[in-house]
Image (cartoon, rainbow, N blue to C red; front, side):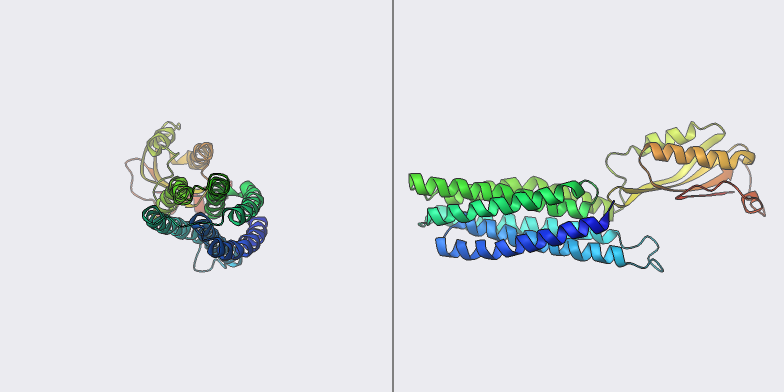
Length: 305
C-alpha cells in the first residue's frame, strides 16, 4: 500500500472539492435550488472527509512506534467512522429541507442551476477517478471515495432537476431528486460505518471463518488442539492472528509454527503470534527455542509451553 501516493491524491482531491463546494454553495443560494444546496452541502462534507483523511494519513506516515507499537493505523479507521457519521447527518438535513419544499414549493433558476451542477459532476468524476485506485487498499481513502461517488450521483440528480425545471417548469423535481440523493447515500454510509466499527471493536473480518481457520490449524500434523484463537484487523487489509497451539512433540515446534503461518497466509493474514504448548505437560524451565537459532519468519512469533 503506497500511503504517500494516497496522500498526494487526497490533497489534490481536497483542493478541487473544497474550491467547487464554495462555488456550488453560492450558486445554490443565488438560484434558490435545494438540490444544488444539498449537493453543495454534500461536497462540503466531502471536503471535510478528505481533510480528515489527509490528517489521518499524515499522522500514520509520521508516527513513531515507541509506545504505539502498532503505529497509528487505527486513525484511518476512526476517520472513516467519522466520515460515515457526517453522511448520516447530511441525509437528515436533506430529508428535512425536502419535506419543507414539498409543503411549500419555491421557484428555482433552472438554467443557472443546470450549468453549476454540470461543472460539479465533472469535478466529482475527476476526483473519484483519482481516488478509485487506492480505495480498495485503504479504508480511509475508501470512505472518501464513497463520499465522492454519492456526491457524483447527487450532481446527476441536480442536473435532472435543472432539466425538469428548464424544460417542464416542474419545480417539485427539486425536492423529489433531493430525496433521491438521500436514498443513494444511505447504503455507502452504512457500509463504511459497519466496517469501521467492526475494526475498532476488533471483530473478526466478515470474510474470514474463524472456526474454519481453527480446524485448518488442528489438521496440521503434530497439532493436538487450538485454543485462545483470536483474529482481528489493525486496519483494512492488515489482519492479525494469535493462538495457543497444543503439540504432541516439541521437537517439531519450528515446523509447526511455519505450517500455522502458511494456513494464516492462505486467509490473507499478515501477522501471526503462535504460542506452542506441549500436550499434558507443564512449562519447561528453559524454552529450547531460546537455546538454538530457529529459522525466522517475517511478521510471526512463536513460543511454546
